Length: 166
Image 1: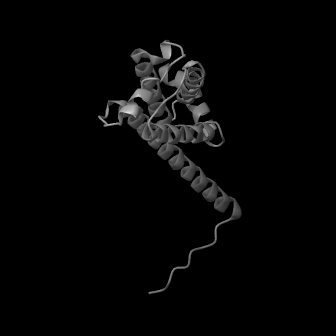
Image 2: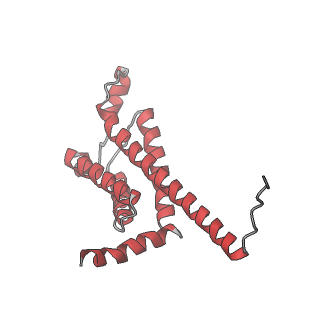
Image 3: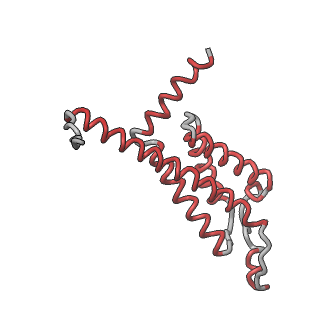
């Protein structure tokens, strides 16, 4: 039985194959980061509801959270709406829906304003660690979503949306 030797491919085909591989790698990386970011968001949102026994002096410090800040950022409807918007942005980004990256940017801008007007921030170490990982992953998601070649996938879906409705 003769050994079959693969034939060399022309340079343009090889370059196209490498570009396709690079694109698929970026797409998988992007989708993985979106899933990680969304899961971190769920964990971060659920952490205040996990029963934890703290020392009395730490509990008294946690009561000072939000002191001197705007009352609106401490309301439950604010956090629930914020959580829903983050989840919607995560699902939209996972499927390359055009408005997903705009919604994530809006959520991050609201986060920045709420941190500036929210008053004193006192959080346990676990909450803060998840919070930092969440924002690092969302920064990577935003960077990838607005860089090529993924940015063109969002633009194509925005142009295709009116054609699909007609």
